[in-house]
Length: 44
Image (cartoon, rainbow, N blue to C red):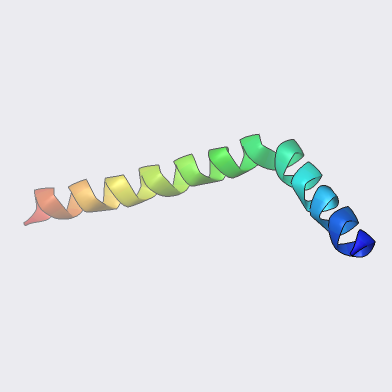
C-alpha cells in the first residue's frame, strides 16, 4: 500500500510540474484541429 501511495504522489508531482506543458500541447493540438476544420469549410 505504501508503494502505491508513493507512486501516486510521484505521479501527482510530475503532473503538477508539467501542467503548463500539457496545456501548451493541448492548445497547439486544438489550434491545428480548428485550422483544419475551418480550412475544410473554406475549400467546400
